[in-house]
Image (cartoon, helix red, strand yellow):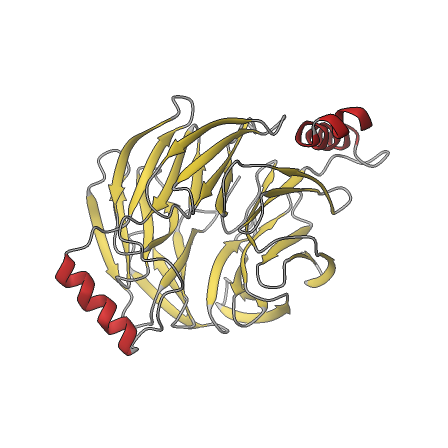
Length: 360
Protein backbone atom coordinates (compact mmCIF):
# COMPACT_ATOMS: atom_id res chain seq x y z
CA UNK A 1 0.00 0.00 0.00
CA UNK A 2 2.80 2.40 0.94
CA UNK A 3 4.66 1.74 -2.33
CA UNK A 4 1.50 2.32 -4.35
CA UNK A 5 0.88 5.60 -2.54
CA UNK A 6 4.46 6.85 -3.08
CA UNK A 7 4.45 6.00 -6.80
CA UNK A 8 0.91 7.13 -7.52
CA UNK A 9 -0.50 9.44 -4.80
CA UNK A 10 -4.04 9.48 -6.21
CA UNK A 11 -4.21 5.72 -6.69
CA UNK A 12 -2.61 5.10 -3.35
CA UNK A 13 -5.02 7.40 -1.49
CA UNK A 14 -7.97 5.82 -3.28
CA UNK A 15 -6.74 2.34 -2.34
CA UNK A 16 -6.34 3.45 1.25
CA UNK A 17 -9.89 4.77 1.27
CA UNK A 18 -11.19 1.51 -0.19
CA UNK A 19 -9.32 -0.52 2.39
CA UNK A 20 -10.82 1.50 5.21
CA UNK A 21 -14.28 1.22 3.69
CA UNK A 22 -13.99 -2.53 3.34
CA UNK A 23 -13.09 -3.05 6.98
CA UNK A 24 -14.27 -0.14 9.13
CA UNK A 25 -13.78 -0.27 12.90
CA UNK A 26 -13.65 -3.80 14.29
CA UNK A 27 -17.11 -5.22 14.84
CA UNK A 28 -18.90 -2.13 13.49
CA UNK A 29 -20.97 -1.70 10.36
CA UNK A 30 -19.32 0.50 7.76
CA UNK A 31 -20.72 4.04 7.85
CA UNK A 32 -19.55 5.08 4.38
CA UNK A 33 -17.68 8.16 3.19
CA UNK A 34 -18.29 11.85 2.57
CA UNK A 35 -17.00 13.84 -0.39
CA UNK A 36 -16.19 17.54 0.02
CA UNK A 37 -15.67 19.88 -2.94
CA UNK A 38 -13.05 22.57 -2.19
CA UNK A 39 -13.09 25.73 -4.30
CA UNK A 40 -9.38 26.24 -3.69
CA UNK A 41 -8.47 22.57 -3.95
CA UNK A 42 -9.91 19.28 -5.10
CA UNK A 43 -12.34 16.82 -3.52
CA UNK A 44 -11.41 15.45 -0.12
CA UNK A 45 -12.74 12.15 1.17
CA UNK A 46 -13.81 11.73 4.81
CA UNK A 47 -14.11 8.26 6.33
CA UNK A 48 -17.35 8.41 8.31
CA UNK A 49 -16.18 5.60 10.59
CA UNK A 50 -13.30 7.69 11.93
CA UNK A 51 -14.34 11.22 10.86
CA UNK A 52 -10.88 11.71 9.39
CA UNK A 53 -9.82 12.86 5.92
CA UNK A 54 -8.39 9.79 4.19
CA UNK A 55 -7.69 10.87 0.62
CA UNK A 56 -7.93 13.56 -2.03
CA UNK A 57 -9.35 13.22 -5.52
CA UNK A 58 -7.89 15.36 -8.29
CA UNK A 59 -10.84 16.50 -10.44
CA UNK A 60 -8.50 17.87 -13.12
CA UNK A 61 -9.89 21.39 -12.88
CA UNK A 62 -9.95 24.53 -10.78
CA UNK A 63 -12.70 25.54 -8.39
CA UNK A 64 -15.03 22.53 -7.96
CA UNK A 65 -18.30 23.52 -6.30
CA UNK A 66 -21.38 21.46 -7.09
CA UNK A 67 -20.94 17.76 -6.35
CA UNK A 68 -23.07 14.65 -6.66
CA UNK A 69 -22.85 10.86 -6.71
CA UNK A 70 -24.85 8.34 -8.71
CA UNK A 71 -27.25 6.06 -6.88
CA UNK A 72 -25.17 2.97 -7.63
CA UNK A 73 -22.09 4.71 -6.28
CA UNK A 74 -20.08 4.18 -9.44
CA UNK A 75 -19.60 7.82 -10.43
CA UNK A 76 -18.82 11.09 -8.68
CA UNK A 77 -19.61 14.36 -10.50
CA UNK A 78 -18.20 17.84 -9.83
CA UNK A 79 -19.07 21.20 -11.41
CA UNK A 80 -15.89 23.09 -12.21
CA UNK A 81 -16.75 26.78 -12.22
CA UNK A 82 -13.47 28.11 -13.59
CA UNK A 83 -13.24 25.55 -16.40
CA UNK A 84 -16.89 25.57 -17.49
CA UNK A 85 -17.27 21.80 -17.36
CA UNK A 86 -17.99 18.83 -15.12
CA UNK A 87 -15.65 16.03 -14.12
CA UNK A 88 -17.08 12.52 -14.10
CA UNK A 89 -14.98 10.36 -11.80
CA UNK A 90 -14.88 6.64 -11.11
CA UNK A 91 -15.68 6.69 -7.41
CA UNK A 92 -13.82 3.48 -6.56
CA UNK A 93 -10.49 4.39 -8.14
CA UNK A 94 -10.61 8.18 -8.19
CA UNK A 95 -9.82 8.12 -11.92
CA UNK A 96 -11.36 10.80 -14.16
CA UNK A 97 -13.61 9.08 -16.68
CA UNK A 98 -14.48 12.19 -18.67
CA UNK A 99 -14.65 15.99 -18.70
CA UNK A 100 -17.89 17.26 -20.23
CA UNK A 101 -18.23 20.87 -21.40
CA UNK A 102 -21.25 22.58 -19.90
CA UNK A 103 -20.99 26.36 -20.30
CA UNK A 104 -20.01 29.39 -18.29
CA UNK A 105 -19.87 29.16 -14.51
CA UNK A 106 -21.43 25.75 -13.76
CA UNK A 107 -22.33 25.62 -10.08
CA UNK A 108 -25.10 23.35 -8.79
CA UNK A 109 -25.30 19.61 -9.48
CA UNK A 110 -28.13 17.16 -8.84
CA UNK A 111 -27.71 13.55 -9.94
CA UNK A 112 -30.75 11.38 -10.60
CA UNK A 113 -30.25 7.93 -12.06
CA UNK A 114 -27.73 8.23 -14.87
CA UNK A 115 -28.53 11.90 -15.48
CA UNK A 116 -26.81 14.93 -13.97
CA UNK A 117 -28.62 18.28 -13.85
CA UNK A 118 -26.09 21.12 -13.80
CA UNK A 119 -26.85 24.85 -13.54
CA UNK A 120 -24.69 27.27 -15.52
CA UNK A 121 -24.80 30.99 -16.33
CA UNK A 122 -24.04 32.21 -19.87
CA UNK A 123 -24.34 35.84 -18.66
CA UNK A 124 -22.20 35.40 -15.52
CA UNK A 125 -20.06 38.43 -14.68
CA UNK A 126 -17.92 36.78 -12.01
CA UNK A 127 -17.36 37.90 -8.44
CA UNK A 128 -19.94 38.25 -5.66
CA UNK A 129 -23.33 39.74 -6.59
CA UNK A 130 -24.15 43.27 -5.43
CA UNK A 131 -26.42 43.88 -2.45
CA UNK A 132 -30.10 43.96 -3.53
CA UNK A 133 -31.43 47.51 -3.87
CA UNK A 134 -27.96 49.05 -4.10
CA UNK A 135 -26.97 51.41 -6.92
CA UNK A 136 -24.69 48.66 -8.27
CA UNK A 137 -27.54 46.14 -8.29
CA UNK A 138 -29.88 48.56 -10.09
CA UNK A 139 -27.21 49.34 -12.68
CA UNK A 140 -26.61 45.64 -13.27
CA UNK A 141 -30.34 44.97 -13.67
CA UNK A 142 -30.65 47.81 -16.19
CA UNK A 143 -27.65 46.52 -18.10
CA UNK A 144 -29.21 43.08 -18.28
CA UNK A 145 -32.45 44.54 -19.61
CA UNK A 146 -30.59 46.62 -22.17
CA UNK A 147 -28.34 43.78 -23.30
CA UNK A 148 -31.13 41.19 -23.36
CA UNK A 149 -28.79 38.83 -21.58
CA UNK A 150 -29.16 35.08 -21.80
CA UNK A 151 -30.72 33.56 -18.67
CA UNK A 152 -29.15 30.70 -16.76
CA UNK A 153 -29.71 27.15 -17.92
CA UNK A 154 -29.79 23.62 -16.56
CA UNK A 155 -27.69 21.23 -18.62
CA UNK A 156 -29.09 17.70 -18.59
CA UNK A 157 -26.13 15.35 -18.92
CA UNK A 158 -26.28 11.67 -19.77
CA UNK A 159 -23.38 10.36 -17.71
CA UNK A 160 -23.09 7.07 -19.59
CA UNK A 161 -23.05 8.74 -23.00
CA UNK A 162 -20.80 11.49 -21.64
CA UNK A 163 -22.68 14.38 -23.23
CA UNK A 164 -25.30 17.08 -22.71
CA UNK A 165 -28.55 15.79 -24.16
CA UNK A 166 -30.68 18.91 -23.64
CA UNK A 167 -30.93 22.20 -21.76
CA UNK A 168 -33.67 23.74 -19.63
CA UNK A 169 -33.81 27.55 -19.58
CA UNK A 170 -34.23 29.06 -16.13
CA UNK A 171 -34.00 32.66 -14.97
CA UNK A 172 -31.08 34.95 -14.22
CA UNK A 173 -28.52 33.34 -11.90
CA UNK A 174 -30.13 29.99 -11.29
CA UNK A 175 -29.05 28.46 -7.98
CA UNK A 176 -30.93 25.56 -6.33
CA UNK A 177 -32.41 22.52 -8.09
CA UNK A 178 -35.10 20.13 -6.86
CA UNK A 179 -37.43 17.57 -8.41
CA UNK A 180 -41.20 17.38 -8.03
CA UNK A 181 -42.96 14.59 -6.16
CA UNK A 182 -44.09 12.94 -9.41
CA UNK A 183 -40.55 13.08 -10.80
CA UNK A 184 -41.68 14.82 -13.98
CA UNK A 185 -40.82 18.42 -13.12
CA UNK A 186 -37.80 20.36 -11.95
CA UNK A 187 -37.90 23.36 -9.60
CA UNK A 188 -35.13 25.94 -9.81
CA UNK A 189 -34.42 29.06 -7.79
CA UNK A 190 -33.45 32.13 -9.82
CA UNK A 191 -31.81 34.57 -7.45
CA UNK A 192 -31.43 37.58 -9.76
CA UNK A 193 -35.03 37.25 -11.00
CA UNK A 194 -36.43 36.80 -7.47
CA UNK A 195 -38.48 33.76 -8.40
CA UNK A 196 -38.77 30.00 -8.37
CA UNK A 197 -39.62 28.44 -11.71
CA UNK A 198 -41.07 25.00 -12.40
CA UNK A 199 -40.38 23.20 -15.68
CA UNK A 200 -41.20 19.91 -17.35
CA UNK A 201 -38.02 17.83 -17.32
CA UNK A 202 -38.58 16.16 -20.69
CA UNK A 203 -39.47 19.29 -22.67
CA UNK A 204 -38.12 22.15 -20.56
CA UNK A 205 -41.52 23.83 -20.82
CA UNK A 206 -42.22 26.42 -18.13
CA UNK A 207 -45.06 25.17 -15.92
CA UNK A 208 -45.15 27.92 -13.31
CA UNK A 209 -43.20 30.92 -12.07
CA UNK A 210 -43.47 31.87 -8.39
CA UNK A 211 -42.36 35.38 -7.48
CA UNK A 212 -40.61 35.76 -4.12
CA UNK A 213 -40.17 39.56 -4.26
CA UNK A 214 -42.73 40.40 -1.57
CA UNK A 215 -40.94 38.12 0.90
CA UNK A 216 -37.29 38.96 0.23
CA UNK A 217 -34.38 38.81 -2.16
CA UNK A 218 -32.35 36.02 -3.73
CA UNK A 219 -34.08 32.64 -3.48
CA UNK A 220 -31.32 30.10 -2.98
CA UNK A 221 -31.93 26.59 -1.64
CA UNK A 222 -34.97 24.43 -2.33
CA UNK A 223 -35.92 20.97 -1.01
CA UNK A 224 -38.92 18.67 -1.18
CA UNK A 225 -40.22 17.13 2.04
CA UNK A 226 -39.63 13.36 2.43
CA UNK A 227 -43.37 12.67 2.04
CA UNK A 228 -43.45 14.73 -1.17
CA UNK A 229 -46.29 16.96 0.01
CA UNK A 230 -44.53 20.31 0.12
CA UNK A 231 -41.32 22.22 -0.61
CA UNK A 232 -39.13 24.60 1.37
CA UNK A 233 -36.98 27.38 -0.08
CA UNK A 234 -34.53 29.85 1.46
CA UNK A 235 -34.33 33.57 0.64
CA UNK A 236 -30.71 34.52 1.15
CA UNK A 237 -31.16 38.29 1.37
CA UNK A 238 -34.65 38.11 2.82
CA UNK A 239 -33.75 36.06 5.90
CA UNK A 240 -36.84 34.03 5.16
CA UNK A 241 -37.93 30.44 4.75
CA UNK A 242 -40.76 29.85 2.30
CA UNK A 243 -43.03 26.79 2.36
CA UNK A 244 -44.82 25.81 -0.89
CA UNK A 245 -47.62 23.28 -1.19
CA UNK A 246 -47.82 20.46 -3.73
CA UNK A 247 -49.17 22.87 -6.35
CA UNK A 248 -46.16 25.19 -5.84
CA UNK A 249 -48.14 27.87 -4.03
CA UNK A 250 -46.45 29.77 -1.18
CA UNK A 251 -48.36 28.96 2.01
CA UNK A 252 -45.92 30.13 4.70
CA UNK A 253 -43.11 32.65 5.10
CA UNK A 254 -41.01 32.30 8.23
CA UNK A 255 -38.13 34.42 9.54
CA UNK A 256 -34.68 32.84 9.74
CA UNK A 257 -31.27 33.88 11.00
CA UNK A 258 -28.87 35.85 8.81
CA UNK A 259 -28.41 34.79 5.17
CA UNK A 260 -30.01 31.32 4.87
CA UNK A 261 -28.46 29.13 2.22
CA UNK A 262 -28.59 25.32 1.90
CA UNK A 263 -31.41 23.41 3.59
CA UNK A 264 -32.49 19.82 4.16
CA UNK A 265 -35.08 17.75 6.00
CA UNK A 266 -34.28 14.86 8.27
CA UNK A 267 -35.42 11.42 7.11
CA UNK A 268 -38.80 11.58 8.87
CA UNK A 269 -39.48 15.12 7.74
CA UNK A 270 -40.02 16.23 11.33
CA UNK A 271 -37.17 18.74 11.28
CA UNK A 272 -35.86 21.13 8.67
CA UNK A 273 -32.27 22.34 8.93
CA UNK A 274 -31.12 25.62 7.36
CA UNK A 275 -27.48 26.69 6.99
CA UNK A 276 -27.06 30.35 7.98
CA UNK A 277 -24.12 31.65 5.99
CA UNK A 278 -23.69 34.94 7.84
CA UNK A 279 -25.36 33.71 11.02
CA UNK A 280 -22.63 31.05 11.43
CA UNK A 281 -25.16 28.47 12.54
CA UNK A 282 -27.42 25.61 11.49
CA UNK A 283 -30.98 26.61 12.32
CA UNK A 284 -33.54 23.92 13.18
CA UNK A 285 -37.29 24.14 12.49
CA UNK A 286 -39.95 21.81 13.84
CA UNK A 287 -42.05 21.12 10.73
CA UNK A 288 -45.10 20.16 12.79
CA UNK A 289 -45.38 23.67 14.26
CA UNK A 290 -43.01 25.55 11.92
CA UNK A 291 -41.25 27.09 14.87
CA UNK A 292 -37.51 27.59 15.13
CA UNK A 293 -36.34 25.35 17.97
CA UNK A 294 -32.58 25.76 17.96
CA UNK A 295 -29.60 27.43 16.33
CA UNK A 296 -26.44 25.31 16.39
CA UNK A 297 -23.14 27.25 16.17
CA UNK A 298 -21.02 26.13 13.20
CA UNK A 299 -18.24 28.00 11.37
CA UNK A 300 -17.81 30.87 8.92
CA UNK A 301 -19.81 30.98 5.68
CA UNK A 302 -21.30 27.49 5.81
CA UNK A 303 -23.09 26.79 2.54
CA UNK A 304 -24.01 23.10 2.38
CA UNK A 305 -24.36 20.11 4.67
CA UNK A 306 -25.40 16.48 4.79
CA UNK A 307 -26.58 13.84 7.21
CA UNK A 308 -24.49 10.70 7.47
CA UNK A 309 -26.15 7.65 5.88
CA UNK A 310 -27.08 6.30 9.33
CA UNK A 311 -28.64 9.69 10.27
CA UNK A 312 -26.51 9.92 13.42
CA UNK A 313 -24.50 13.00 12.45
CA UNK A 314 -24.61 16.11 10.27
CA UNK A 315 -21.52 17.33 8.43
CA UNK A 316 -21.47 21.04 7.55
CA UNK A 317 -19.08 22.48 4.95
CA UNK A 318 -17.93 25.90 6.21
CA UNK A 319 -16.10 27.74 3.45
CA UNK A 320 -14.54 30.70 5.17
CA UNK A 321 -13.30 28.78 8.20
CA UNK A 322 -11.94 26.01 5.92
CA UNK A 323 -13.50 23.19 7.91
CA UNK A 324 -16.22 20.60 8.09
CA UNK A 325 -18.15 20.81 11.36
CA UNK A 326 -19.58 17.53 12.66
CA UNK A 327 -22.85 17.79 14.63
CA UNK A 328 -24.51 15.04 16.63
CA UNK A 329 -27.99 14.75 15.07
CA UNK A 330 -29.59 13.77 18.39
CA UNK A 331 -28.01 16.20 20.85
CA UNK A 332 -27.65 18.90 18.17
CA UNK A 333 -24.19 19.88 19.37
CA UNK A 334 -20.89 20.08 17.52
CA UNK A 335 -18.66 17.11 18.31
CA UNK A 336 -15.72 17.62 15.95
CA UNK A 337 -14.12 20.00 13.46
CA UNK A 338 -12.24 18.63 10.46
CA UNK A 339 -10.06 21.62 9.67
CA UNK A 340 -7.92 20.57 6.72
CA UNK A 341 -10.18 21.93 3.97
CA UNK A 342 -9.64 24.63 1.31
CA UNK A 343 -12.76 26.78 0.97
CA UNK A 344 -15.17 23.83 1.13
CA UNK A 345 -18.40 24.44 -0.81
CA UNK A 346 -20.38 21.23 -1.16
CA UNK A 347 -20.64 17.88 0.60
CA UNK A 348 -22.38 14.58 -0.21
CA UNK A 349 -22.05 11.00 1.04
CA UNK A 350 -22.07 7.46 -0.22
CA UNK A 351 -24.26 5.65 0.55
CA UNK A 352 -26.42 8.62 -0.39
CA UNK A 353 -28.13 10.46 2.44
CA UNK A 354 -30.33 13.47 3.11
CA UNK A 355 -28.57 16.79 2.64
CA UNK A 356 -28.73 20.18 0.99
CA UNK A 357 -27.24 18.77 -2.25
CA UNK A 358 -28.61 15.24 -2.33
CA UNK A 359 -31.23 12.76 -1.17
CA UNK A 360 -31.23 8.94 -0.89
